[in-house]
Amino acid sequence: MLIRFAPWIFVLLWSTGYIGMKAAAPFAEPMTFLSLRFLLVVAILLLSLPVLRIPMLHWRDAARAAFIGAFLHGIYLGGIMYAIKHGMPAGVAALVISLQPIVTAVCSGALLGIRINGWHWAGLSIGILGAGLVLSPRLDLGGAALPVETLVAACVGLAAITFATLYQKASASHLDLRASLLPQYAGAALITGLYALAFESRVVVWNMQLGLALAWLVVGLSIGAISLLLLLLRENAAWRISTLFYLIPPVTAVIAWLLFDEQLAWIQLFGMAVVMTAVIVVRPVSRPQTE
Image (cartoon, rainbow, N blue to C red; front, side):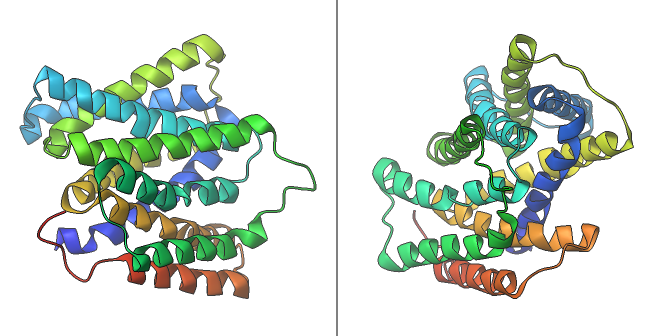
């Protein structure tokens, strides 16, 4: 039952991440905020060890998990939050990340030897089209081009989550999911903390909005969504999981409409239907016996 509904729960949780980062961005620098977030997650996981009886990983496996966490959490989220902080609209950031399935599919074929047939490529292409339609009314940049560094930061985030997804599937899918979380977030906290110490002022303006955003991103995203992502990676091929990211832009648009009364245009509703079509095309009818 959990596996059946996990993809849709994951999409819902992950979609709120852009809203949470947008809410927090005015009050803290990206790596400073992410360091606080990851350290809180590490503290929660440490306190839960005796209660949940989570096994400890061998030091080699723990190091591998920390390496994955540095990319999956630290560099990916750091790049996206940096881009949002420095002028990139959240919708544009979501659109950049929606390119991940194409990158993952190409890399899966080249690096993991996974065969991608014509239907899969059609679904991936349709998904990109649908995501663009959903986000097209939100791409008003005020007549000014985005700074180059924001585009570079978003692309770095895209590359980081793609690499982490493939590496997790190829080399670390055997690791205990619960035991992997602690070293992952420790690795993420280390890399964001070092960056914050070296390049940021580490000033945080505390208020209710920042506190609520931090609390949700810690519990709902860092623990809930990431646990589901790792579970899905263990049960499915990496490129299939990446197709779920097509749903994130339209779901984010719906959440923004519910919370902020942002109206959806007809082209956005049509784009959502296109995205769902792409997911149906790419999603397997049943789980294959072998990958």
